[in-house]
Amino acid sequence: MSSKTVDKALSILDAFTVETPTWGLRELSRQIDMNHTIVHRILTTFEDKGYLYCNPETKKYELGIKFIELNNVVEEHLNISSIIQPIMKEIALKTGESVVLTILDEEEGVFVKIVESEQKVRFAESVGKRSSLYIGASHKVILAYLPLEIQHNIVDEGVAHSAKHIKSKETFLGHLERVKEQGWCYSEGETFDDVAACSVPLFDNKHQILGSLSIAGPKYRLSQEQSEEKLPILQEHVKKLNAILGKVNFPSRRNFLTKKFI
Amino acid sequence: MSSKTVDKALSILDAFTVETPTWGLRELSRQIDMNHTIVHRILTTFEDKGYLYCNPETKKYELGIKFIELNNVVEEHLNISSIIQPIMKEIALKTGESVVLTILDEEEGVFVKIVESEQKVRFAESVGKRSSLYIGASHKVILAYLPLEIQHNIVDEGVAHSAKHIKSKETFLGHLERVKEQGWCYSEGETFDDVAACSVPLFDNKHQILGSLSIAGPKYRLSQEQSEEKLPILQEHVKKLNAILGKVNFPSRRNFLTKKFI
DNA sequence: AAGCAGTGGTTCGATTATAGAACCAAGGAG
DNA sequence: CTCCTTGGTTCTATAATCGAACCACTGCTT
Image (cartoon, rainbow over all chains, first blue to last red; front, top):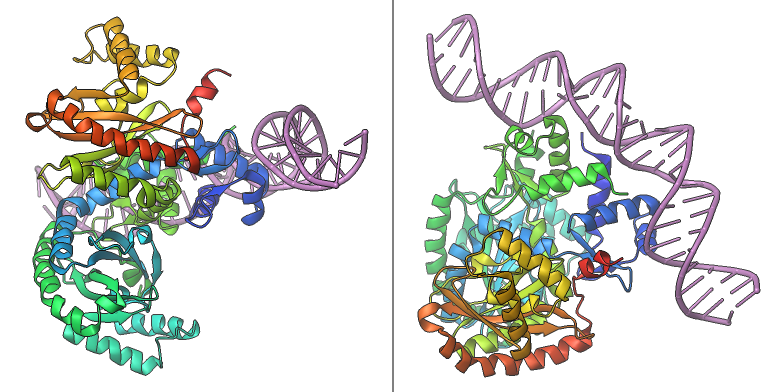
């Protein structure tokens, strides 16, 4: 049993996105189809607690600095800035490309950290981006190490959305099989047009997939051949990283696996 | 009027800190003195909504990847990665020291972004750190531009906490006055032992203080003389930044000012 | 192996916080 | 001035919450 009130409160929070970062009271209550009284009460509660900020001039609400603090709690707990980011920086330096850390969160992949190369291609704004596992090398390499049943479900979902890079369910599942065999995945223009990526898997201490590390750059600089040249650098560092992740008990987020089958 | 239930839910969230990032059910309900039933209901609601993750082995709860997403919404809205961070990188490159962005949030200062120098001094884990305005150059330079009444309150607070760098209220207020006159603040070993910093103020489009930008490094490398040599670089870039912030209408977080006096 | 103390989690009736229509006051737009 | 929309408040029927008592399980001690 879960709390109706808190559930509503979190639905309200969910409305604050990169696309719509500020909301007026009436506007928001219309959007989520709730009485404005309750939206008002919840918004002021968030504000009192420092979770939202209400601009006194526009009377519009936006997410508070609190979320920068909470983000840090998560990053520290996942050892991102202490362990993972230094390795990402090294890879970025040696390959000259941006490095992306993707984490499996329930049935989706989230870009959790991006270390940009010196070259002027901006990815940083994609941190926090969440998407389904059938699209992009960073996500597909994760999918390749998940149970077949999950793969079927997610590929079905991709087919239903008529993803242009999926020719047929069978060929795509075969592709995933090869990805798992070779231990890496390359893709071009799937998540972003003109961007290519090469990804390798990350595992926890029980050898379960928990995410991926990718190098990403513009297509013209990161063809399949070029990325295969840089692959050994990526693999070498990820080997180190996986050895560490196997010890520190990185908290993987894969409850959907256990829950689905109970 | 604010929602009792949501208020409780947020108090529960507040328990998840860098120091105590995971909680068991009973443990947490004892800590915040709430019946474990209600804590359980709220925790599962957060979990259902992806805000918390429950480790199926330890049965302990921790903050979810969701907060990385919400952090990004805030950072994008504040133009941090698009506008501020590039300028911070340039300053870090030219001065060779780490650069810290501090934002005034209600009556406290929060380290919002840190760009580290190549030198091996780690600050990144301090992102999200929140503290009172009487300590550290980054915070004091903000305080210096706040109304005198606020300065009095906060310095009183510092005296009450017997902060070792405050000799007397009067000399400290005089110090703040000089900081405001000269437009920058230097400090040594206040926020962290062995760390010195030099800070300049950031203003919004109505010339109200909204934060500060600092260079920070180990004392031995950043004496007052050395930091004054690097000050022009900092000032030059912050001048550019302030010109931009004056246009983009950076959402300042200073409601305590307006609210206090109504 | 029985007993105990600790977990996480659930049930259900009494209690209490919430929901939402109706209401202000204020600010544009015409 | 009127109309419309805004943020915000009031008040009571109603529905969600509270919390004692409960279960099942685990690990420790006797």
